[in-house]
Length: 309
Image (cartoon, rainbow, N blue to C red; front, side, top):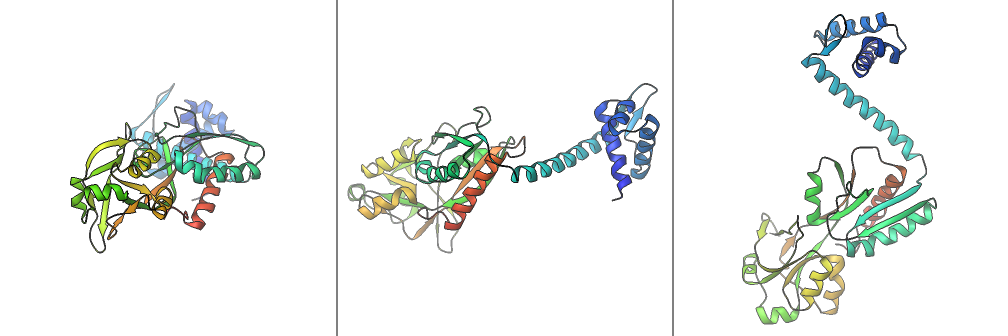
């Protein structure tokens, strides 16, 4: 596209944003006549009328309104690209406010924060450890890390950007005491006669999906008499012979090795759960958020979340 074409588009945008040809011309450093001629050339090139003119004012046509919105988006993207480059080369400062799942946060996010604070001494970090899905915009947070069932709601929120930074493996398990009392299920449909310990909050409920090699994924339907919004509490309940649980590997590895839990339905695959970074979409990322995101991807991506698979 020729430079003159861009000049005509910017003249159009300036006139619309200023609300007058005089104001738009002033913003562009042009005369009123030059701005008017640029508009005429643009409309002639597009073969469409963008403005309805009167002697004292103008209004956007439907085509003009659509063109203005699309141009505005393009300019916003250009500004975002500039801000991204500037932010990537600047040093993190200020306070980074995070919300992270409780058990996952203590085991995996805290070591990352320790390294982050050593690397960037001008940053302070505030962390909210909770399995509750926090509204990060309402609570003024910079970044949320969510896993598994907490992710779907964030994806549907147009105010937020979601980015998968890793995945963890899950394990279907129960205590030996529970299995002695209730018997061990051999097929997913056997779960209908078992007590299943489900993660659930006010807005999310865990769904179990299993897959036998070469077969389609099936939704496992079990009897649920106890729901909790804490993965650690579900782990405690499973070890106390209260039912079957689907938990991340980083929580079940040690109990299974120690004999407190036993894997069940081992011929069936459980789904990988995403670990998602979530942040507001209304502005470009600050250096403090961008560098923390980069560190998560670098550290967790290389190891494929060792201990989670």
